[in-house]
Amino acid sequence: MVDESKEKTNIRIKFHNGENEILSVNTDHKVSDVYSYVHIAAPVDGNFVLTMAGFPPKPLENMEQTVKEAGLVNAAITQKIK
Image (cartoon, rainbow, N blue to C red; front, side, top):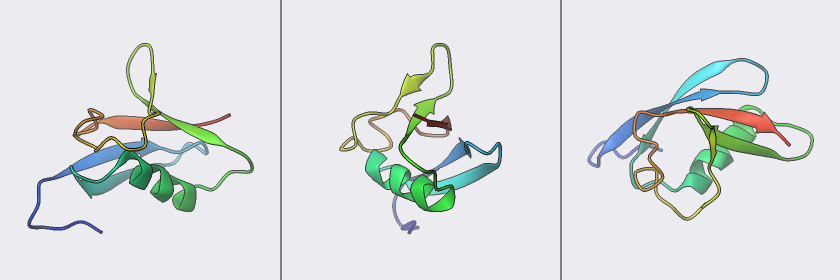
């Protein structure tokens, strides 16, 4: 849930099935919160990883980082099945 009184951002997510969505979050949400959302929005059998767009794609591995610390402010990420 986004707290309108705090700094917020949008993250563009490309799911494993090709669908796209824009997720609004506060910049102090954790990377683990983004993973939890993707797990519910586009469930997979097995595991997945989220990667930041760019070359090379950067996997989001530190679940304790905030969205801001992870560089996800106005970023694009992709869900990849492991």
